[in-house]
Length: 393
Ligand code: FAS
Ligand code: PHB
Image (tube, rainbow, N blue to C red; front, top):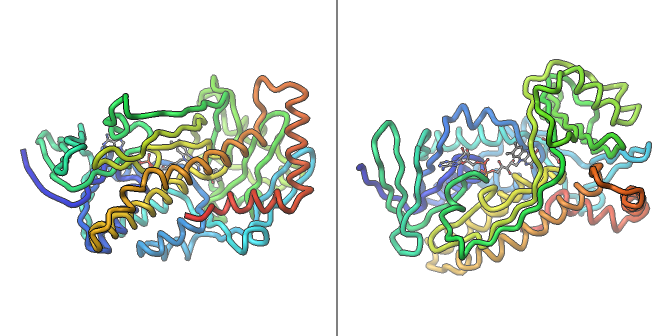
């Protein structure tokens, strides 16, 4: 078995693991990233599309923002279509000038991989059977297999950035780990198409047939979603059926201008609210989807991963540069405080805009009242705006 040493071993080569690795390496802190899949497989995933301003700042600090700033789109507002109306939330006007950046997670991950390569960062792909060990000791280590050989990495700390289905969360003893979960009775059918966006800003639509979302990746690449029953399979949906249903859920002026085209990606994602506590166990720290999942309605999944990484980054800086471990000691409490606020906002937007199968007439009227209140109150719009652009870290 080969044996190497690093300061921070990171399990997971998605945006969370890569961003932390890049930030720490730029401060001279040594990391190794262990990723189960190939790089192409990771880059083949189509996920988030909206970045909070805090995420944008972190990418700048990581030295990875050049392409995002050149190709991303800064959005100052977002539309909600409901009850035959299109109302706009003025993000910048309501949230002290803060905006969001529309730039796909796939491109974020591509930029992070390129930055890791440029710095000679250690990212090991197709690392199989990754397993953290001795988490409660001062000498934890990680083992894994690659190309049939066994390897061991001795380290000071282990980061579980391995997503919802990873090994890290499962390494916390059942009598320590607390999990909170809410599963929604529908999914999102997503389509990526090489077509011009239906609207200059995102459109979230509440409709009696179900929720729809018009998003984008660029002026020539659009991303659309419609709420579907959990029983639906992606093969049940032809492109034509998707476009017809999407148009049926959009305001007339948006539907009429919608450019359809062949889907270049089509998938159904389940929706859940999930939080695992604590986000630290001994020398193991959980970050991103390994610790929490949100329904994507509020665009908080990737963005909550970013705030975890921000807290870990500063915690390790203080630890290694100043011998001060307060940031690491307080990580779980601090990260969870912001995570639960993102969970709340994502749950609120999901309840506001989706058609739940068991909704009564009273439920429907209350949903309309929530929307009527939102667009009759500047305070309510400011509250939505400050959550959408991202609460402070
Ligand atoms: P990730 O899951 O991205 O990365 C974890 C990495 O760890 C993966 O590359 C995985 O291969 C690797 N891994 C897993 N187990 C391992 C092991 N045992 N050993 C080594 N490596 C291992 N968020 C939004 O804001 N908007 C969206 O529209 C949106 N859509 C989504 C659609 C889907 C289908 C999914 C699953 C998520 C979506 N999300 C969305 C959330 C998503 O963007 C996540 O928040 C984001 O990927 C979090 O990044 P990571 O924490 O790095 O986890
Ligand atoms: C996306 O563009 O994929 C996207 C945007 C906003 C959301 C969810 C997904 O709330």
